[in-house]
Image (cartoon, rainbow, N blue to C red; front, side):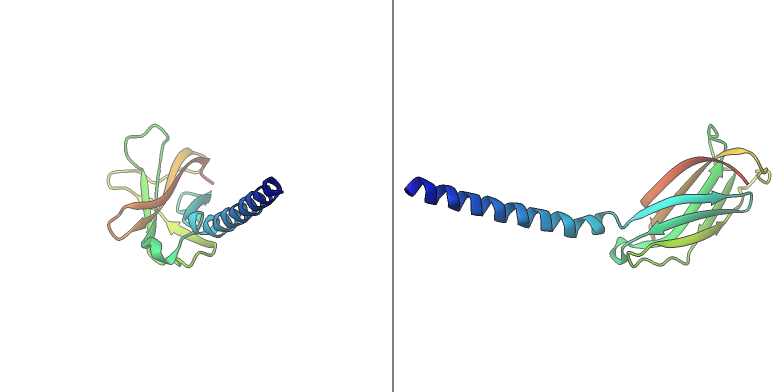
Length: 135
């Protein structure tokens, strides 16, 4: 009889721990996934991104760099300072301009785009690099 009672107690304790663990993972998942950015479009004058960030992430802007995939520096740069960081999905269009000494971008060119959510110290909170054909 004593063995059955111990087994039952162990089973109940294990079930409770699993439930608590599952609840903490479910609650933690949205917070850890909130700081993200995805390049969704690009042309010779703008880069479109979908992003989300938490209010406490410290994000102050969205930045984009565009250039040939093997280039040593970007051919065009852009910054969007109007960001909304409340954990909900957002969309931003970043105007890009040729970098100093660079020619304007051409339509149809294969380019690497680097987009990032950055804080006031210009530190990347979340970023993405994507190869696209400029439209």
